Length: 579
Image (cartoon, rainbow, N blue to C red; front, side, top):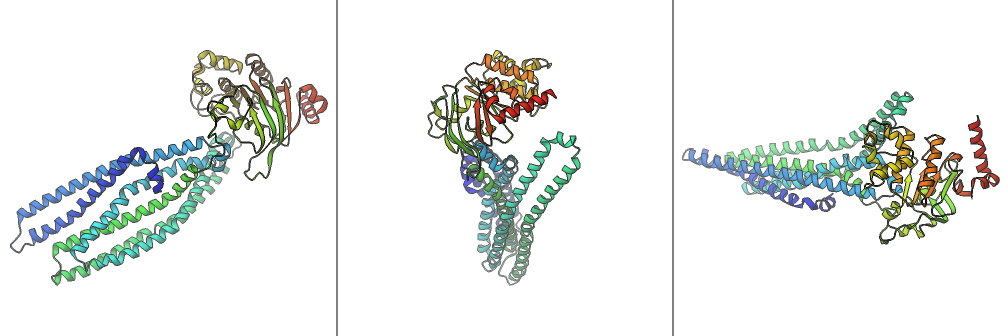
C-alpha cells in the first residue's frame, strides 16, 4: 500500500506533504488546550487568594484561540487530503487502464472483464479511504498519542503506568484481528467479481432472458450469488467487529483505574484538581487516538486486498510487446506467409489450436477460408495483427516477421471485422471515424457505399448523425455488420480480414459487398472467413481448415474435384437452398 502511495502521488505531492504538516499543527494545538484548562482551574478558580477573574478570561481567550486555530488546521488538512486522495486514485486507475490497453487477448482472458471492472471501481474506493487514513489519521493518531502520553508522563509518572499496561494488550489484540481479517477480505473480493460477472451476463443478455421467460431463474441464480457474497462478508467482518469491544474494554478499564488512583492522589495532595481534569482530557485523547489508530489499521488491512488486486493488474507481464522494434518499419504490401506455424492458447502448449500451417497469400489476393466450427479459422487470422503470438514457426506480413514491427504500425495496416460486431455509443459518423478520425465526408460515404450501408443510413431522418445507442441497439444485425465493414475500410489497410462478418446479410448484399471490395479496393489483400461457400467461391484461392490444419488450398472448381470436405459442404448447402 505504501509503495503504491509513494509511486502514484507524484502530481499531488505538495498536498500530500502539507497535509501531515497541518495535522501536526492541529495535534499540537489540541494537546495545549487541556494544559491551559488545568491552569485556569488551579490558578484561576482554585487560587488560594480567591478566583482570579481576569486570569480566567485571559486564559479562556487563549483556549478559544487555540480551538479556532486547531479547527482551521483540521479543515485545511481535510481539504488537502481530499485533493491528494482523488489525484492518487486517478493516477492508479489511469495506470491500470493504460496497462490493460497494452494487454494481449490472453492477458485479458486471465483476469476476465467483470473482475477488471471491479478492480477499477469498488477496489479504488477502498484504496482511497485507506489513502486518506494514511496521510491524515496515520499521522494524527500516533502524534496525538505521543504528545498526550508525554503530557501524562510529565503531569504524573505514577498514574501514567496505567497506559503502559494497557497499550501492549490493545496492540496485541489489534495485530491478531488484522492478521486474521486480511485473507478473509481477500476472498470476499473474489466473490464480488463473481457477482459482477453474473450481473454483466444478465444485463447483456436481457433480451434472451425475456424471450425465454427466464426472469425467475435469473433471480434465483443472482440470489445465490448475492447470498454467497453476504456469507463471505459476514465471515470477514465478524473478525473486524471485535475491534470495538476490545477497544471499549481497554478504555473502561483505564477510566476506572485513573479515577480510582487519581482520586486518591487528590485526597493525599499528590495531584491538583486541575492536573486531574487535564489528565482525564489527555486520557480521552490517548484512548481516542488508539481508537482512530485501530480503525485506520483496519481500513488499511481491508484495502490491502484491493491493493494486491491492483498490483496484479499493474505487474502483469504482457505477452506481446514491441520493445526494441524499429519504429520506422512499415508494412509495404499485403503479402502474408505462414511457414510451419503452430499456435496454442494455453501457456503450457498442451493442446494446439493450429498445427503446421504453411500458406502463402500474395498482396491484393482475395482469399476465402472455410471450415467447420472450432476448426481454427478465427485463430488463424488473429495471428496476422498479433492479437496472439504464434507458438512455433514464422509469420511474415509485407516481407517481414510480424514480431519485427511496432504493434501500431502492424495493426494500422490490418483491418479486422470480427465475428462479434461492436459499435459504441454515439452517432454513426462518430463510429465510422474509428477507422480514420480525419476521414473526409466523401471518404466516409465511399466506404459506406462499398459496404452497402449508405442507403439504409440515409433512410434515417438524421442520416450519418443518427445516434446508435449503447452497442448499436438502434440498428439490426445486418446493418451493424455493414457499418463495421465500412469502419474497417476507412482505415485504408493493406489487409482486411472479414471473420464471418456478412452472416447476417442476405446473399445478394453479400455478393455486392464482395464485388465492391474487388472493384474499388484493388491492391488490398482480402481474407474472408465464411460458413457459406457462396461467400468465398469466387475468391482467388480458398483455404479449407480442418481440426487446426490446412486440409487443402485451391479455387472453387479445384476443391470441388479433389476435396471431400469442401464438396460435401457445398452439396449440403445447395440442398438446403433447393429445399
